Length: 196
Image (cartoon, rainbow, N blue to C red):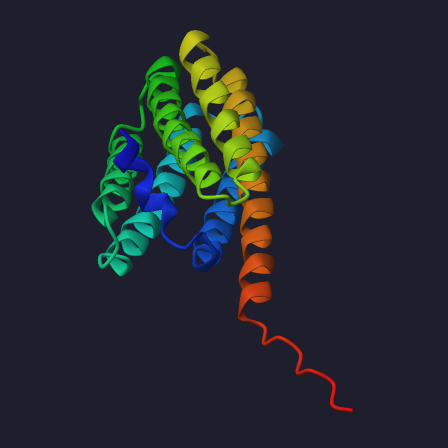
């Protein structure tokens, strides 16, 4: 399992735009679910499906772009799983709240676990993994709560999933902006020594 996180270990400073795009879509999806808590399950399933397809596609493209890196295929595999969850939500829009919660909960658990493993591996390499660890922990906690609490109402499911998506997206955005700052700090030329 140690090798599964290596896809996240590719120079994360270059990955900040992908993380920021994922953050924007997560927050947008979460806000749709929170702003309209009486949203029908059909619309919630569609919103999740569209989000999962976009996020999965971003992960697949990013994984393929990094195919010269070790374990690049793990990002592609995770993206394909997310893409499948999104397609399932779109082609089976009459899905029950419990079934939709199972799909979202499983996705959150898998994503969170990979992010936690990656954060632990980065710590060993003396990188700053705190935000990635926080994102992973939030995802795992949300996944456990979503799976353990069989939600039967669309309003409760919308609030639960929407709240998680907003928190997850904000944490991803903070991580992305921190990585952008780190990338800029390492690419800026050092000042020339002052001449006497």
